Length: 315
Image 1: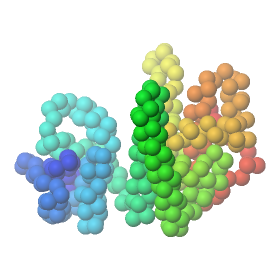
Image 2: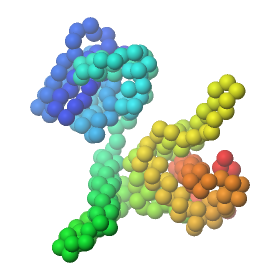
Image 3: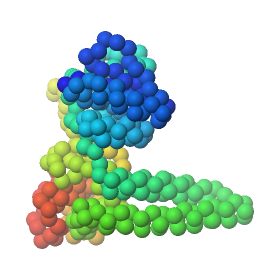
Image 4: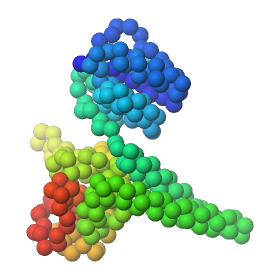
């Protein structure tokens, strides 16, 4: 297999093959996207490695998928850690492309499965909802420091507009989910758990496509909800969560808040942890992790929530 690294930016694609001693090739995007794919296709058994770069990598990923060329979209933090591990300090687009090719050869990252059109549509809607909510939150915060009448009226109009837009996006998300039998069934199973609503369900399907395909330890680690040991020699530190996908943790934390109040099983677990001296935030993170494990099991086993099932310990 020939590992090919691609450094993606807004305007260019720098491509370098691991088995090549020549300099990397640079292509403009989107004008030379086809030529870039043709260059990759010239290598037999090519496997492309690129970083997730704020969706600038999406056109290339889709073009490679159409040509049946396997591709791994890696976390930029992992690429940065690989760079440090081999002692590379210099940074240019060409060096980054060569580094990604070497990373692929050394670590053989798994192929990133191409999302279906239905999932891509849902992802775009969920992303837009997140953007609108951030703008709405900003306007709410601005209102606390505004005393001018005209400014307050403007703030009120903008907040109403954003609220109406969010409602429209929520309807579009519901429609996009219902139009796909796979997404509709997965969403139904997720929402069978008290504490999981349509917004959280859609966010999980978009940001955590591995849900229902891996075991409970892997899914917790992917979401950044797995507690890691911090021990060295005779010293034993506190276990703490780290890394993972921030949008998932935010969604599950809010779901945990609801579940700790209105889901009898999780309410009992939450009260037990508080009685044992756990801080509230630690208890809520544990509830979020437990929720994720339950949701993963429901999709994996094609099942729905049954409140009479015995609850396994969280920690």
